[in-house]
Image (tube, rainbow, N blue to C red; front, top):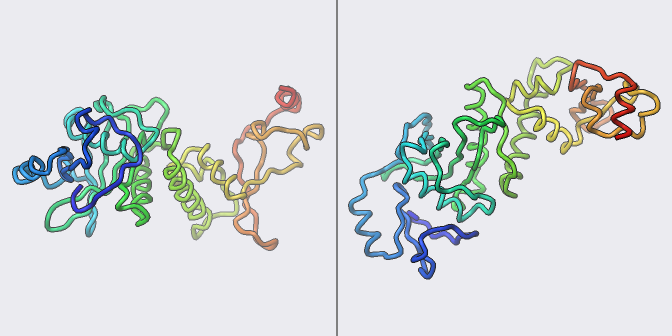
Length: 283
């Protein structure tokens, strides 16, 4: 693909005639594929596409983002899904692309816009997912492009005025990338200049466009989440399950030293009665 030769990680349902091919040649602009070098060179001589077939919605010095409608560009999007299936084990959808929008990140030079990675999202997601599938091509991994893709998906959520979360399950590399982004984002919000002594989980989510579940997941992974035992009924102080702590007060430590100030994080303004907590504890 382009100047790169890639070794696939997983099976992708290319036509059966490609099964015995030693190498599949893929046009880096239109993503058409060929098993024969002669036919591929003939295609490249005629291919006039120099960027993904969509609207350019973002550009900086050398990076551009394109928005492609799966209904309008079915063939290109299906080719993209076949390509991504080579590197994503959990991806199952590659034919029905109509309900999705594809956001492709490219690098620009004098020869055109070269595909770096992409993420897709449903046009109407009942669960509120802002990413259905995300991939950075192997030759561009470990260069910060994955984080840029994730950040861009949350910027779109902010413009839509919604909270977003990626569709589960995430791949191993995807989970690592999201955890790193979530941790950095939450810490940036907490250490922002002028931030008051208290902040709620909902406020962190609103500022970052992250869901409450993702914020809590991040705080737990960073070991920054604590609950105040004094807020719990006496019989439940040592046996209460975490799921019953949604209405209690939490404290968030922004550092590791004993002199570091503590921020209080309230996950809910409502409080439970002791009787309701006892029922939840028994269950």
